[in-house]
Image (tube, rainbow, N blue to C red):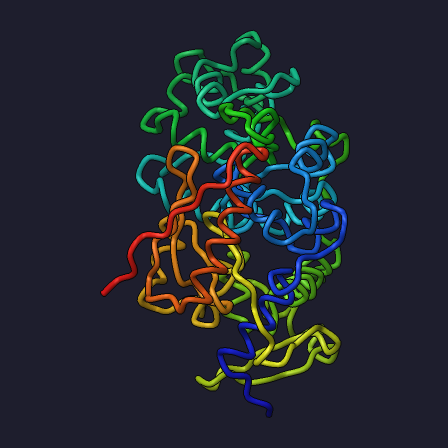
Length: 394
């Protein structure tokens, strides 16, 4: 079986992620190909797409959000992702169990004993008026018996067993669980939700407000397959490999957070080709996907915080040294030099400030400065191109 070294895997990753050559495709197609972009920091996807697309216009992404062609929603790994509307509807039910498990694991004590079906019904009753709400507003409305709905309406919605209850008994249903825990359980797990504009628009600063995904997009989410098969899981495997492969099953799991995909992998294995990495792990891939020559030159690229080009793998050595692995988890923005994380970057007073993680060769330093100036111009709408590279570590 062919062994793919770290450099070969690096060039394959860059090619799949449109980081080797910027792609000349519509923004919607790019978001779909990338299986979405991690987006808990609302402005970061703009930098991610700028680094991947030729002549990227941030207004195009804002327009897609406004027209509901893309949507911000809790999905892979229980993090907010910017995905196409079609993918949000197709993938949400497949992620439901994982989302619940992750929220319940975070708030194990506060949410112990909560009837999840009852809480979900109470949340739907609150959101039935179609009004967007923040996570806290939704949680407090549920705690307060669903205001602004009448208490009688909410009581009828949550008393599906037909047993009469007093309002004091209803008030006690969520005792011990604070608004934060209840709110996260509702918006990130129990109710398929969309995070609405203006949050996520170019240069917009707005709090997170939610609506039901089906209400916002005007379509219901796709249900699980009734025959127990997993066509969505199989599609996820194919889509992941197209954007991230070659990859091991552990990498796939690290990207999506789903533990139940071995059957999906097994179902399509005959479609796939196999390799091994230098550690002996089996890597799967699509047969016709690009795997460039390891010596292919890789240009400097600036990546946003939490970019999936790094976080989309369990074994990230193909793109970042183990010594620096924590940077991406902590939300550092990074610079790729020769395809690998070689620096971090921030913006201070309109200047892109680059902090090397290792000493740059003169040509690399010049390339980082050039790309940094282009990024500064993009971020300032052409008003400035200042870049500063700090001293390299000794």
